[in-house]
Length: 348
Image (tube, rainbow, N blue to C red; front, side):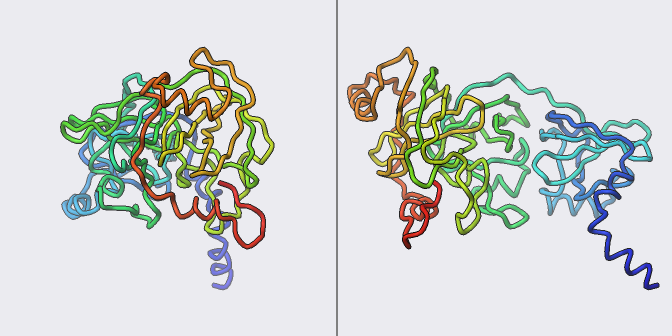
């Protein structure tokens, strides 16, 4: 008996090995899928077999807990396919929610590859806030309800706010709604709410800009053109002790740029050329970047002061300069600006 107890205490340490015994074969993929049956259950761990015939009680549970199921027609991203010993095939959801069945041991298809429309535009958010959904679906309750700030696991729901900009990597229509897939892979956003547009495509500036990081604490890259700390490529902890992605004095080459006016300050959002993310030039009145070189066919922009003059003279395309609503800087960013206590300046 003692031997059995000792063995079970090591279950957590050998979990990965046990899962590898469950799966006969694994294949890494990057593909959107859609459910082809009414309700497709999400499993937190890789099951040993496929059983998707829901009982009446399970169907009732699915109605009450829609975030634990994928509904027919919903589109979701997948990054791993695993075949279990019984012959069933499972798909691992890219957002970390778990596994869903693709095919039963008898070959019945429960999910199929989804076809996305081509869309590589840059979009600006028109809504006050816009949830990043785990799947292209209104039944994705945890992240689709406007008043819900936290998802089912208790973590804050990711959202874009007014005037944030993002790159798309496809779009899809689900039950009459158009969803746009974020290029950074974090999910989908709803394009319209009834007849009201929630996003608008914009034309970014294309060229080459060389910026030098001047802020003492360094700058954290963002997934999208936003200063919001929730969009950091590498998340910071509560104490903001996370090191900056790009340290002070580093020169960074960028190939795309958007100009936005935030609380009266013209802010340049620039995409790093290697695809690593986005930088921004100002945090409130604090300058973070210095433009040191450029190759751009548009208006001359040697200094931030000249950019302000060009914007004031309307020589910059209106789609590139957005007057965003006056809104308070995030508490985390205010803390980053303060850097009190005489210690090291935290990253932005």
